[in-house]
Figure 1 (cartoon, rainbow, N blue to C red):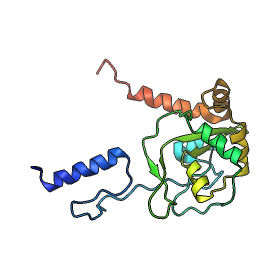
Figure 2: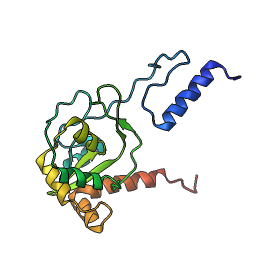
Figure 3: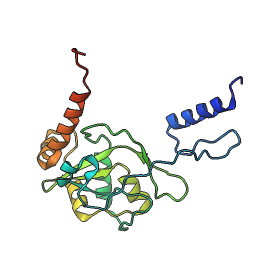
Figure 4: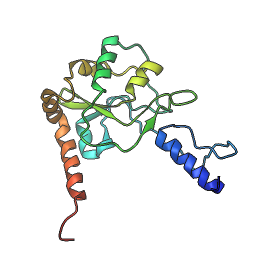
Length: 194
């Protein structure tokens, strides 16, 4: 082929990564490349203040479904209507800013069968209940049972691209998320005076 093995290995690893496959890159001999530790999902207990987007915003944000390999969570059944509504909301969720990381399910026994980076912000009683997009997989494949308050909020949640949703989002603590997003955008803008 003309390329040294290490270049071929790096090319294979890059293609694997760009394709979204979550298996560890392999060497030409077929051994797993364990030189880089896999990134673990950030976990939080259900309904606790969520500091993921900054400590100041945690007052108005509550975590739901932030599960990892070591998480202890309630298992049970979920009403089909709740699951379907959650699925609809996650088709095109409103994101105040783009998430850069891709997370894989750590609950699957052998290989992660689901991956995601989106978050869903569900307004509820003046708070935003925030769940990762992987919550659908957690419910469907691992029988995760979210808090009843979350299920009620999902059923009451307007479509995330509607003005009604955006008003509720802002009134429930989303204004702080928008200001962080705006400030980061402004700080990254180049200036003409060098």
